[in-house]
Each structure stands twice: as structure tokens, then as C-alpha cells.
Image (tube, rainbow, N blue to C red; front, side, top):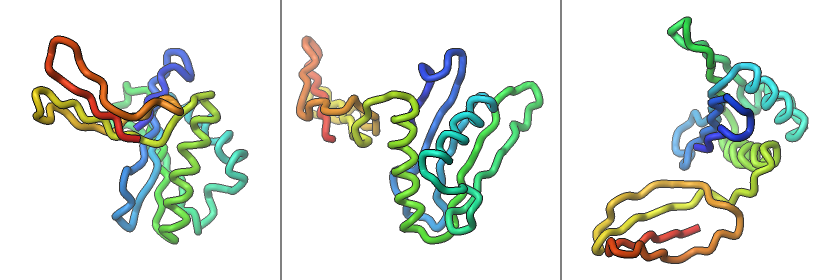
Length: 149
């Protein structure tokens, strides 16, 4: 999940896609301000140079919130056919989002926090491009952070 708070001021845009594509239906979700979603959607169509409505690439579905007071919607790209193309499209979308947002992203990276030899936390994060792999000691805590890109 890439949180895009700094792309548009006062927006809560979130882009997420599965880490693994093990299911028949996989997709990309864009959550946040509907106007900002539309801008990103139109820009993505130009970059990828396809119509996201084409059957072979699934379809975009807009989902309104259940609570009428909420201002955000979710755009879900539902992929149901040609799973290899869908996997590629998901990865391409992330890279295009990085370009749109003027971000310098690496691939999704696994972050493991160890304290005194035991794993305290594991999660997937996005680090700046060319971020050094390795271990970072946490002074005074006995903890180590392993970064594996």
C-alpha cells in the first residue's frame, strides 16, 4: 500500500495492490478524494496507453461509501481474465503512480525489526530508490532492523 498524502494537499489518497497474485481476481484499489481519483485515473490511461474498460484488462469499478457523510470513494480495478497481463498491469500501475507523484521508489521491501534476536515486527514497506540493504542497529535497545530489497 502506498499512501499518497503528500501528492495532493488535504487528500487521503491510498493506492494498494496485492503482494501476491494467487487468486483469480486481483486488483488495484485507489481510495480517497473522488476528484483526485479522477485525475489519477485519467493520467494513468494516458501513460499506459490503453482503455481500462477493455474486457481483457478487467474493469474499473467505483464504490461509494455506505455512510453518506463520507467524502471518499474507492476505485477498484477488478481483474478477472488473463492473469499474466493483470500481474504486469498491477506492477506497471505502481511504477506509473511513482512517476505521476514524482516519487523515487524501489520495489516493495520487507522490513524486519528484531529485538534481542527475536522478531518484533515484520512488514512490507516502500523505500527510496537505491536505499542500502543491510542491518541498522538501534542504539541502546539491543534491536536490529533488517532491510532486504
